[in-house]
Length: 286
DNA sequence: CATACGTGGGT
DNA sequence: TACCCAAGTAT
Image 1 (cartoon, rainbow, N blue to C red):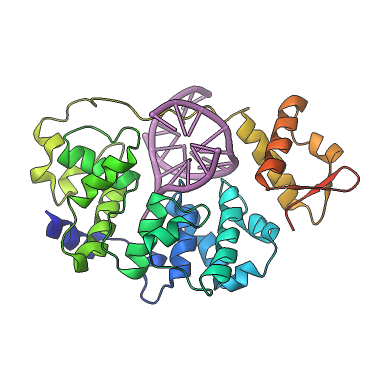
Image 2 (image 1 turned 30 degrees about the horizontal axis):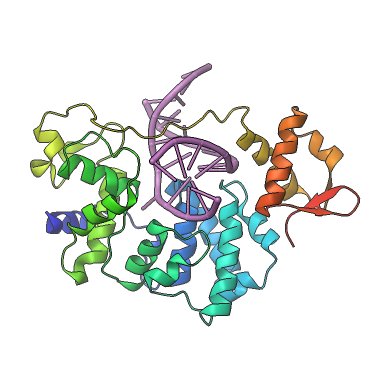
């Protein structure tokens, strides 16, 4: 089964930037941040621009955090930009400017969790670790557990499930990447392409006749239209577009509900995504 | 452990 | 149109 995944990945895997020979660990770190909850197609152009401007952790650490937030543009979840900048600073201060290869050291970096730490360790440094993302959880749910989808994350169990499947250490990166790619291209959330799947013959879910999902279901996303999150996004868009500071009066034009706008602004201040400057004005962090 | 956190494309 | 989903993390 492991070799089937690896063989399939070699012929059918996409030629993505972070899979190019010579792609740096810093490039891997940046790409993994951008890929968190964000489609590949939206990441690629922004990643290229980012690495051209900030090819090393030291380069990013030398820029103001607000520059990172502005360059993040509309990728979404802008605190990732703040965390990425903080990562660059920490890497310069504590790791001599080099991205650490150790999972525990990676986990100490801001915005780096169980997925990102192992993805960097495995894909940038060839470590023998289980990488668990939503694609891999779905493939395991179907092929191994015989369930229709992955349900909510159970990090400890998910890591154990993937660990049990890992091949020999030298094959670990290709297997992890192949499982992820299989979930992204073939074993998709909607309309899986089982006829293209290299392991469909041993798929517990397929062989059971595609039964309905059993157990806890994925948490449903709340509506975005009219939400506090959308209000925050509107404020951030105004700040990104501004050359310098923005007054509270100008912010009132971007969102009709003043109570909601107030929550958005105070939340963004608390998160460090915006700063209050003198005379009732705001700016991106310096 | 459930929830907050952006944004846009596909169906 | 409305809903689903996308290489998660922090609290």
